[in-house]
Each structure stands twice: as C-alpha cells, then as structure tokens.
Length: 430
Image (tube, rainbow, N blue to C red; front, side, top):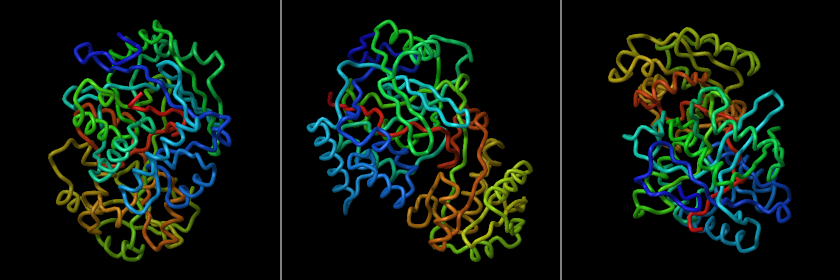
C-alpha cells in the first residue's frame, strides 16, 4: 500500500485508513494551542460559546468551522479566505510527510481515550463498513458540504468506534508504544481535558495499523452529518481523488470505552405551561422543585421503567413518564424493531413533537439540539421556551440497532469525549 498517497479502490478489503499531511497550528504564531481549539461545530452553544471562543484567540478554529457573515455564501467564502490567510502567514502549516496520528484525551475523573486519526475511505451504506445509527438533517448536510467545498478541507475529524478484542492488537500495541515517546504537543483545554498528539510515519507501522483495521467495521459515534457530507462530496468528484476520503478519529471501545450522554432539545416559542397543558391525559406529570442533579437522578430512575423526560424553563422541573399505551400505539411507527419503538428519542419525535406539540424536528426556528444539560435549562429560562432533557441510551443498544441497519432518530446520542477541533486538519489539495 502506498503510504504517500491513496491506494486504488480495488485494493480495499475493509476499513481503509490512509496517512495524510496534517495541517497544524504553529504554537509560536498563536496564543497557545488550548486557545485556538473548539468543541465540534454542533456542540458550540451559540451565541454564548461562539463569542467566547472567538474572543479566546483571533485564530480560534471556530472562525473556520462556524464562520460569521450575513449570508451562507459569505460565511463560507470568509472561512476559505481565513484558511488561505492563515496558511500564507504560517499560522497553520502542513506536516512534512504523510502520517497517521495517535490522539489521547484525559480528564481528572479517570477518563482515558486513545485512537488513531487518519483519512478513511468513504464507503456506501450497502458495504456495511461504516454504520450510522442516527438520521441526519438535510439542511445541515448541505451547510457542511458548502463549507467543505469552499475551504477544500476537512476541518475537524468525526468520531468512529470499533470493537477490538480488548487485547493488545497491532493497532492498540502501536498506540501504547507510541505514547511512550514525546508528543508533537500537549495542551489542556478549559474543560479540564488534556490532549496529546503523536504522528506515525514509519511505513511498517502504518502497514500494521492499516492491515489490522481491515478486519473491522466502524460505528459512527459522533459526526453523522459530516459522514453524510463526505459521501455527498465524494459522489460529486471523479474517483480517484482526495474526496474519496474523510478525516476521522477511530477508537477501539473495547480498549478505551466512551461515555454515552444524551442530547437535549430546546423548544423555541413553546412556554412550559403550554407544553404541560398539551400533555393532559397523555403522560403522568410530576413537578420537582429540586436542583438539576436531583432532577436528573429522578429522570434516571423513571427511565428504568419506560419512556421518561424532564421539562424545564419555568424555574422548576417536570418529570414526564408513564405515557398512554394507546397513544404510543397510534403514533409510533410499527415497521421497526421493538428496541427502536421504545427508544425515548423515538417517542419524543413521533409522539411528543409530531403529535402533541406539532413541532417539526428539522425546523431550526422551532427546535435546537444542545449537548450541555445546564446550558439547555438556562437558555429555556432566558428565552421563555421549554427544555426537554433526555436520559442517555446504552452503547450496546446503539450498536445492535446499527448492525440491523436501523437508524435512530436524529441527535439521539452524544458519545464522548469528542475530539477537540483545531488540533489537526486535512487539506484536500495538498
């Protein structure tokens, strides 16, 4: 396999991860690597988080992944100009030779995640190599595609998982040997996570990783819209080309388990009293005048017995559970497995959003998807809307549905920790 370029499609046997010349910040040209990183574009809580990141450093990656201008076209052109300027000024520079990158994240609670960043060949769903587990929103895919076309770059890796044997396979052995050496950089972001990155350029090491990964399929843990974007852009460009590949982080969750958290909903222009009034007779509703942590414990207990949600936005929490079985029979589609029909996200979208509150799930003027629990509550209270807090789904449920080819409702899960954006980028025209 040619480690300096991309192998021909006929050589593909499984997951095909190839080296690339990573674009990385020059630490001497910025105010510190932590100051130029960002969470993934869809985790940034706008506008608060966006402004905070923009103010952290004039070269923060958020200026590329979430450019600000009056129109979508102007935003994408601004991102492209910014990227070209940073390259010409040496703020970002390409590594001298192609490589794969070992990436490590740690936090103070004992979480350790390690994986390999590379350019993964984009596959069709029928090939079963990369398994999605959530639906996507077409307008988001279109937005990401426009940005990638304008910049000709993969600005942030998506997160894929695979299940190794739990033993020191070629990839995990190489990762653990690599981290014994000095990293390319080490930094700690304000969320308390430390980040380290190493490059793998030795042809024998690259070949071992590539051979090992051909035996696996991957689950999309985070980045469904970016994967759909990769597929759209690959279809637009004659093959072979750099567009046949997309930037990913691959993590063996048998070796380095991820955390699975919920993604919450913020319903704009739906005050909590109106949301509760519409539920009369459909769900059991209990008011909880307790702190957020206690309310989430009550949600976890209720979720053990069936579908449950927390509503917030009026200074209290309202626990919804015990939905009317007849209502679920009328509103939840019957053409999917029971594990899908009983998901909290399925009932939320099919029953609560579509039937009771009449809110389109893909209308950004009516609904927002937010990862941070406390931020969702604060925004609901500030804006007069309703926060719908969710309980997370187990990873084994997600993986089992994905293997059956069944996708969950959009924004059903939040796997983490997510890779920080801004540590390594991929330019498609190198």
